[in-house]
Length: 122
Image 1 (tube, one colour):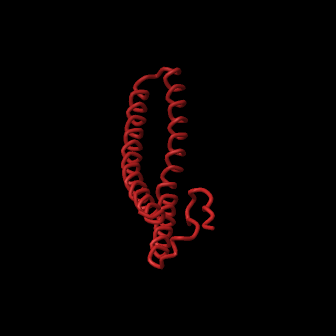
Image 2 (cartoon, rainbow, N blue to C red):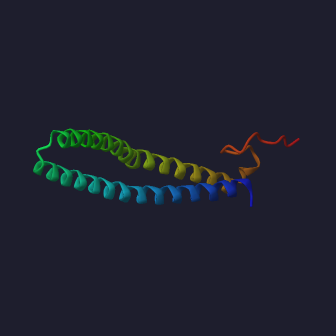
Image 3 (cartoon, one colour):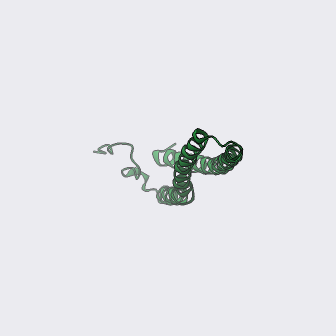
């Protein structure tokens, strides 16, 4: 297997892993968000039955932390919706260029992707 072939295989595996990661994380994010909202609603209902000042202060802190969670979840969702597709497109373009390089037989030149300094062919 040539270096270009190995790069193509590695990039295709990375592309597939990135797709699996994004799919799984979208599900986790949706499930966690729903569970957090349900828990906050239940806490609010329980607190409404109690007229304790400490309980209301505690519920306020919980609500603030939920807002912090929602902000982080929104940033992560944005990464999944925009960053991952961009990375997938970039990987697909690299794979296409490497396959074109392999097809033209130009693989003897320096590597297109990392891997250190090209060896002197002298």
